[in-house]
Amino acid sequence: MVSFPRTRLLRSFPIQASVEPPHDEPRLGARNVAGMAVTEALEADAWAAADAAQVETFRAEYRARFAGRFYNGRLHAATTFGIGLGAIALGLSQLRRVRRPELAVVPAALVFGNLIEWLVHKELLHRLRPGFFVFYSRHALNHHQFFNSERMTFDGPDDLRIVFFPPFAILASIGGTAAIGAGLARLSGSRNAGLLYNATSTAFYLLYEAMHLCEHVPETSFAARIPFVAFMRRHHAHHHDKRVMVERNMNLTFPLADALLGTLDRAASQS
Image (cartoon, rainbow, N blue to C red; front, side, top):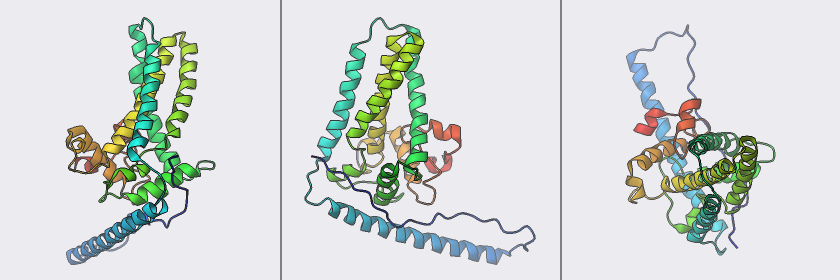
């Protein structure tokens, strides 16, 4: 039996915001401006040091919580991807005489999946909503305490517990996807359209898990050196800055919804 974290509240980090001075405030001299810049830099360094210490403390506490319990990270990954790939294969095996217009479902499902990824990440994983505390706790109060923008990599297979969703999540995803696919098939009069939607949506779920893994693997790994993966690693690392995590870089797969909905920090992703 694979065990997963029980929810618990952790102390939160302050989110810093810039405040504009009143318009009638006299202009500061160059020396004062330079002094303020030095002060802000020192405060930022102190905050970063405190955040780094908090991450290491949390990692030790998190691992101690599960000491002695059976968990196999490779089995976790194999279960998730095995279920997903099996569902995809089963769906595709039922296709019959696919027409070109039906193939339009594939890119549409990818775009829809990207928008849903953004919405769930922003509104359920980073905001406490009634009935969804377990999602918020697992992500904001555990995952984001285990990793920060400077400490993005896991140390071994046992840490995959905090990277992947629990295996039951893909079963829930497949169930929800099947309901939408059935509705699409009925509305369009095309069983192939529903099957293609189901397969594409499940593939997107696996893409999410794979990309999230790649965004937390050690920098020396082969995946980290793939150009697009390297770009998304920078993109995701900025999201792990606790000062901006509730409002920037919500996509993990590809930043389409971030670009369309105004949450993309282009400079951070390119730096």
